[in-house]
Length: 108
Image 1: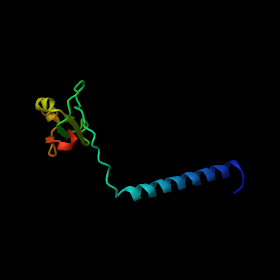
Image 2: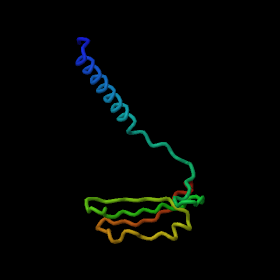
Image 3: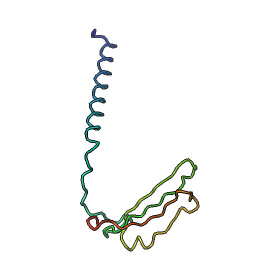
Image 4: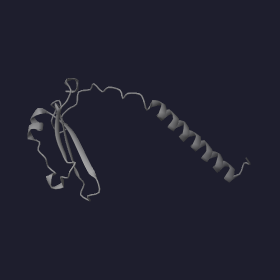
């Protein structure tokens, strides 16, 4: 390849393409690896609450445009979980979800 502006640009494109191919190949190799366990205790999502989270609260509802679903999940302490209730019932649809699940003992 000649040492011209277009030759250098082509070399740069080829180098970038090879880097992307390597990154994709490495990601595919790691795809079967399990995610590392995060044993860090999680604090309650509510502002100024330092209690440890005990429950995961999830609500899935129709987005305002009606084009898809929105899913919001928060980890909350026992007190704040008791205060939770569905907030988007006006956007409920066939796959609407309001779910409260206890966190595994190791995560709170």
